[in-house]
Image (tube, one colour):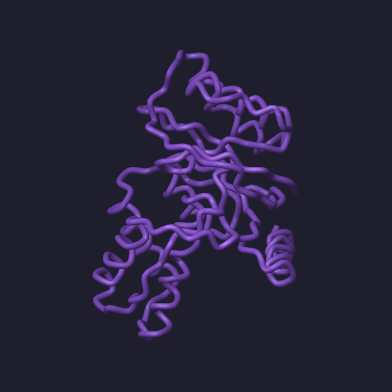
Length: 240
């Protein structure tokens, strides 16, 4: 098991070095439904950033609250969201980078566990009770793809990393247009089934559920995927 994890990590690091890309966490499967604790499948993603920067309050909030949490003004520079990357993935990536830089530059005596404890606390302050942020941060902390359900132990899984590219994003209010018990059941079982079977048709099936529940256009291109992206719904293009 350890050897498999090591080989996967080396593969990701090699891609980052050779292709000048970022390794990020991608919420690949999982549909949010109000009042329903659905599982989220988080995969390792590889993306080439296009440096299309947009100012966002969430990262500014993180800088202020992280500085307050550690008691030093170690994070001073203003950070922007590279909108060529899913926002949720970029938030998790850049905030850990900021934390690492701050700990190093200010020589803050802090272990990895302590660092992630603070990251989780700051995440919760900015995105209260948000299972997506918890899933992505937990995957980052464990350095592994995971199947995550809020309140339960995350399950590490062995899945290949995916190369992704953002196609487009749309504002998301979280209000379903149509929902019944069968759709709730199906949306919850797909991430679990995919983690076991890796069946490609489950990806297409979840795209169909996104369309049915939230009245979104059905994606007819095989390697396009709707993903939950906090206040956005984002279409990504993916490949192994």
